[in-house]
Length: 205
Image (cartoon, rainbow, N blue to C red; front, side):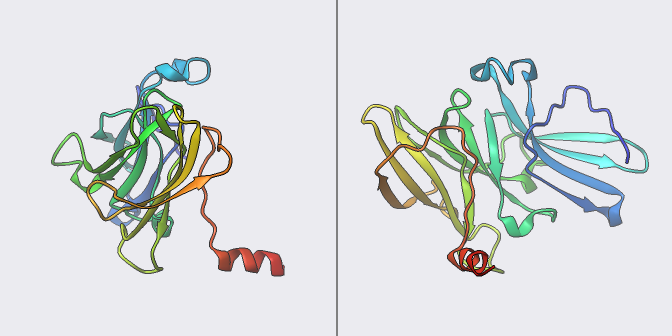
């Protein structure tokens, strides 16, 4: 085990990591909690900006690049790319945390070119807040961003909740399905999607 000191970099929810240069370099994509002292008691003051971090295992040199300065957390990727080099990240917009006012799609491959790598965005609207999003691929082995982003959204003005399905290929993360829920799903739950085929396998065990 090796430890690397990175002053000012505070990670709570890592997004993904992979190896490059034949294992010499580790790349980490994660939100940096800028106001970590508020993480437990004053969540509304927390600001997390996503960064791409490269660690040279031989020299110990750590370099950092901003992916987005927006207040983002609870980010997910296509599960098929966990531990592998990936391009797209889907993150929740904190406004303020832990309330999620929208979601963005980031292209981390553009971190060298610009400070904000946002390539898609959907805000839920006034008084509407969601939970952690989750990526669902249309089919196994498809393009990395060919799928749907799903989450729960609650309208605090109307007192109504919906299950939202968004198209991850579209620049505005277009809504392709919206299902009204009989009960509210509280804020703060982590997301998970389980295929029916996997459920059937679990039941058969």
